[in-house]
Image (cartoon, rainbow, N blue to C red; front, side, top):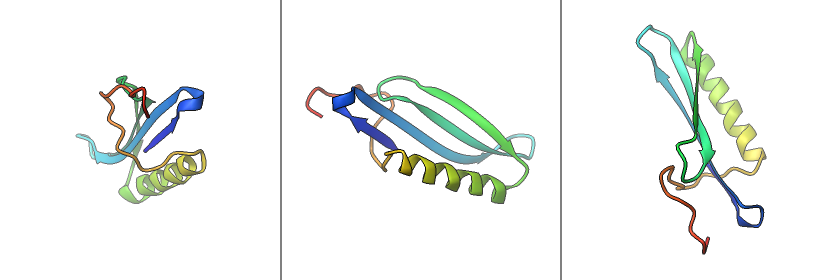
Length: 83
């Protein structure tokens, strides 16, 4: 997901994923930051996939309501001047 607003010098990405860990828990992995940077990563453990997917769906709805859309912003790519 990306939110790009050049008039505010805002070039943000947010990636959300559900993954298993090595200890039998399910992780909701959140990776966010400014496009062109490494960003930050947060991993929230859940006991089952259903709960993790509900949390994921809630975050996606929240991000969409805050102006994020599905985009192809690459984490390693710096924003261009013409976008």
